Length: 399
Image (spheres, one colour):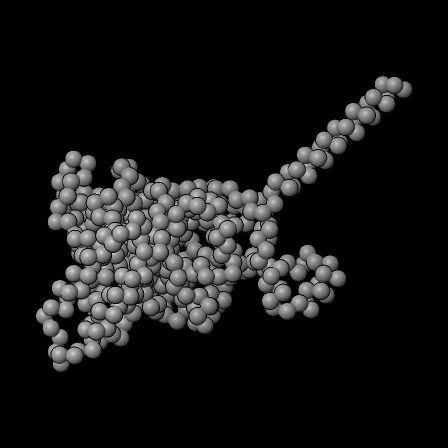
């Protein structure tokens, strides 16, 4: 009997330990427990700080990743070199269009590649673009001054444009960014911006731009209608499912993706490090819960959906849902980033790992996770190496 009592006591104690451990495990996975499945190579996280230059940081981040993929040493390219040259080209076009064009600090991935083709590139340590008493980018004054200048030019007070206006504008850029170097020394070698671009071993003609919208024919190119596309760059148009297959094929073959998206959404949570499109799971509700849900206002429903306390069901994003959001301005061209991996949460939801350019003080040290639904819904366009695209899609795009 004593042995039996001892055995019962031992079993009870073991069961208590098991229940405690289970409770602790459940507690430990509250919130989003996201695990990386794969990652491609990438350089360190940067900080655009108080500037609208995400497009330059993310476009160069893709090129830096490609350099690493080719087995070459890591190099941090200068975002401000691209920004400075793009400002100059943008001013010329703005004046030619008599001001009927967007002029601001924003831009597109297209600008990055075209700038390098025209002006070359330099390392960040050679051209930091901080010639105005700051240690990090602060472009409020620069944006205001340059916009006021080109607006004064197009007023045409002399009844014809002077021969000095462009020199004056470039003088402003030199004052803020510093003068562009004709040549420089890097790792013991002398370069010009053009020769340094060639030394990177990257074919800049390999970069293409893709999107997915129904107001233009699929498998053709169109000028994407967003304000920051001042250069009128074209994108290839794919059906949504084909578009998403490009993401996975690229990442699985070691290629990063420059990603233009809208992160001004309720589903993007900087503190939680996720971007999601949650949807209530009616099927799992009891009758009383369903009854209560139907009585809630839209605001009350949103407050319950966007708690970020744990992962759940996500909205099924169709081509039609995506298009409607673009057409009614609930999806806008907002931010450029770099997709570097694929991950899954504790209930099996799929995410893309995103490298941001807002420094490293956030939850995931400069990264966040965008759910597959969010990427399907809120992607404006991508820049990608054409060699990373599935062959059957590349053929349809005549690449």
